[in-house]
Image (cartoon, rainbow, N blue to C red):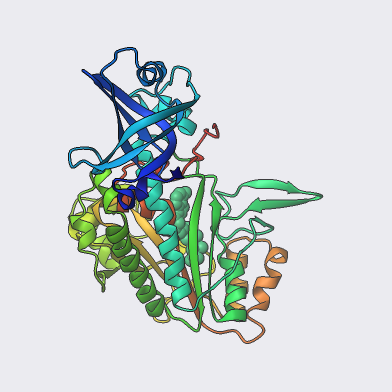
Length: 430
Ligand code: 4AD
Ligand code: MG
């Protein structure tokens, strides 16, 4: 008999199939026993009929506990009322293992308990749905860049230098030297962009963020395109195209999951380019009028991100930040050197910053000055300075955080549910 996955079941109407999975739930009603079986790709209702109370299948049914592993065989029937629209008339049931008392029951559990059992929590329907959307999101991002001729470059995770400031660095030993876990692949991508024209890296990044928020992870995944000869405006357009592409793909491919997550997709459907674009100066004035305490020179906090999303109901680009709140490598605005040619894309509905990026300094003298000003050890950046000595060109790029983007698409308020095993402040188990 053919082993099939539940997500493919519609193609096996009236056929005999085998399903391998785990018991999600069960109930009895007269001469019928109902099993909800999950196999990771979906959930299907299985039914066992018998007129004898002592039927061998009923006995096996009685022995089954939540999350017991099993193989069932039977005929697929269309059944509009069943979850998924099909059910399986079970003729054979093979028990693989009877599960011990499962800690996560259909009743509500507190978050600390669920986090402690993250390895099991992943089996529940909502967590499954979020991570299905994640898999599709990553695929759509790869398709977007590959389709535009970008080359994938894998940048190192162990690095001798900081990219995004020294306060969130994770330090480790590297034989007789000091090394850091990568905060961003950007600096290396600036080198690969000069070698390949347009590139992107996609990998885990690490920030020892000391604050506990619902938007920060210690380990998160980021996709970072970098384009030689591109200006701030070019990269903003690329960012808009990317965000439009991935939201459309999620709406098209993840209907089922977004329904499971009860995501109201109205705001996602509004995502069209161009996004509203305001300068930091304009944004700061608007926020003040709305009651924010943010002064010129302060960075956006979570309350400001929420206020911005009350003004605009689609993602918004903020540009030209005070240089002193941004990284050392940002190209200054020609007319206002205290402003940096950076862009942040803020999500709608208060989900926060999806994208950070901008134009990079391409002038050798200026970059040397900035490295000094930011008190960075020059030795670690010699190779980076080289890029400004040998055919330096204006170039730009950005980073999009996968988990931030996923929490926005799925409508998940806390970022911890957007990665299989979140690394959070003071939590590394499981
Ligand atoms: O704004 P960030 O720090 O920019 C960079 O790292 C640049 N070097 C990227 C580049 O230009 N190539 O981070 C980019 C994005 C943020 O907008 C956010 O989505 C995400 O990465 N991010 C985090 N996501 C989860 N947890 C954290 N602690 C994050 N820090 C940044
Ligand atoms: Mg940022």
